[in-house]
Structures are given as C-alpha cells and as structure tokens.
Length: 236
Image 1 (cartoon, rainbow, N blue to C red):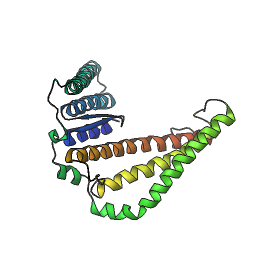
Image 2: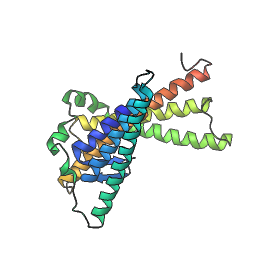
Image 3: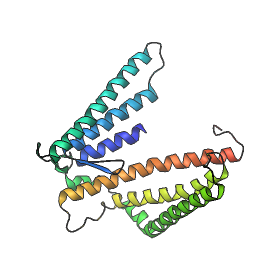
C-alpha cells in the first residue's frame, strides 16, 4: 500500500494532474498539494509497517506518524482551498504544465518498445476477456444474491467463484493499461489540447497503478479463499 501511494504521488508531481478515487480531478497547484498529502500518508504507512521494536522506539515512530497524519490533512485542506479559490476566480488558474516533466518526457516515461511488441497481439484477447469476466462476475453476483437470499460469506465456495471470475478480468484490464503506457500512451482526441493529453496520461497511469494493486489483492484473496474451502490454513 505504501509503495502504491509513493508511485501515485509521483504521478501527480510529474504530470501536474491527480485523480483521487478515479473520480475527483485536481490539476496545477492543487494536484501538487494532493500529491504531497498522499506522499505523507504513504510515508506514515511505511513507518508503521517497518518501524523498529526497541523499548523507546514506539513513542518516536508514533510521533512521526501523527506529524505525517497532520501534514496529510493540511495538504488535503490546502488543495481543496486552492480548487475553491480558482473556481471562484480568487486565484489564478494553473494547469498540468506545473508538473515536473514535459509532456514528451511524461509520455516516454513508461515507454518500452519490447514490452509493447509483446503485448500488442494480446490486446484483442485482453479486451474480450476483460468484458467477459466483468459481465460474468456481475451476472454471478446477481444470481448468487437472488438465489441464496442472504449476504455472501467470505468463506463459501460462492466467493471463490466470484474471485475466479473477477480477478482475471481486473488483471486483463490492468494489462491493457500497461500496454497503452508502454506503447507511448493513449491516443489523444484531435480536439484535445496539450494539457488535456497530460491529464489523460495521468489518468491512465493512476488507473494502471490502481489496477495492479487491486489485482494483487484479488489474487491474494482468491488464494486464501481456496485454502479455506479446501480446509487448509491460509497461513500455510
């Protein structure tokens, strides 16, 4: 989780655009503030996960965690204030040009011709299996809910089937994002300006990072669910 946060914060700093929950879009100065908030939060998580266990260490590291938590809150509130000020016309608007990388460097950041050549023939199949898996997962969830008439349990075979359907779909969708980035980024609309293209690149990078994280979580959940169904301990 901490690594995801650091990479996600880097997207905002480098591109000047930040997408939160893939719904809320910040650009310019507010994007840098949101990136700083995510960076502080990710650092706090990293401290909690890796802190030493000496007798005097907990108070020190808990103090750092609280400080970073306040920094996360302050940067988030500042980003919201900047967005409100720009929307009301009280502050001058800024866009993704404030990012640390040029548009060309941002586009080439993840480019890999070798990986692009490997993924290009797989694109039609990835698109097909993403749609099939997502549709099958939705149908199974509805059938399961209507058939059993009760809330799904994380220990039953129904959950295993759900994960078997959804996890490959998310993985294929994530590979589509990877394929887009390594081949030079998504194709912009002819009517889009340069900042619109930077925002599209940032969205694709953020969505791909989120997809990688969700894919890892789904496959780990699938592994644990299979172990429970087969009567084995998830820790083995």
